[in-house]
Image 1 (cartoon, one colour):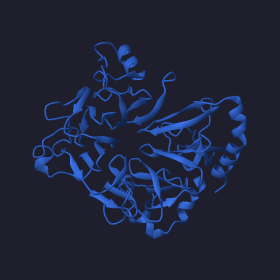
Image 2 (cartoon, helix red, strand yellow):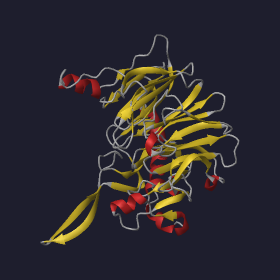
Image 3 (cartoon, helix red, strand yellow):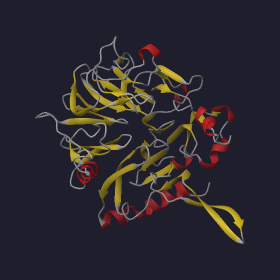
Image 4 (cartoon, one colour):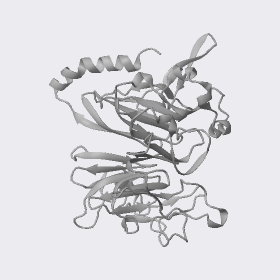
Length: 418
């Protein structure tokens, strides 16, 4: 994509979407369930051809004259909003039991399909198997398996364009929220309101406090996050069970599960009031030690105070872009999704030799620095299940010299001793 002017990136479970300045969409990644929106050769047609189609970004074809303004990606589906506020979708939706479907008549939609039941859309956000739409007249529409599990006799798929009485996935509309932005995590989501006190509403799973609230493990409709009443939130990123939020004064707040340091609080996590911590079902199931708490009240990542300009999340890791165009990450890096090398930690002395083990997670923000990012001013970052996508522009030698000192001071401030 080095020759295209990319303005935004959307990352799904195993695929990536790019939106260019002239309204085109490119995709690459796993194309088994139609998420790429274009033809992907089968193994029978040739493994090499399939690999080329999946690994190389290629354009998605829309009807003549259609230009795209917004994009979003779920686990196995993609959404594109045109400049005329129409919704195009492709791929498929899944339930935990493995069943899948796109509409009442289509299991896998391999090319963009116009969704006529949802119109006048100005923004979109996608979770693992749900979508949130925001319309120009101030309505919010949620489609998918995020607002609560259906009763057994109606356990069907969350599908776009379905009839209200036939499918659980029919659009659920909310009015009077005065939305100005929407955001999605794997199974939870957020709405920024321009009028309601506190400005942030959350819905979906709250099993680990990822909605920033106590008192419920699942919210079937948007609820006001009162713990944020003293903050002005401008952007939100959400992962599998954690959330990070950007404030208007360039600070970052975090809440939710802290299994792998995805909250970026480091040693400071021990200083947080115990009443704001919780032990999530996920930790209990995995047998994690009790010090791996979740956090129900959004808490500031002090090291990033005043530096951040954008936030992003993968399933178990977090990404922050700073004023100087640098990227800092934290959380799980078992697939190198943080862009960081493992930390060597003392393990034991055996047979007269010191042995170390690799820690594949980081609990403090760390600078991503390698031969690719050197000389770049990073402007785009997005996280998937086990990977990340970074983008930016190449700086001139003069720019590099002019910003070098500021970057050095920033790194010292963020990555200094706890």
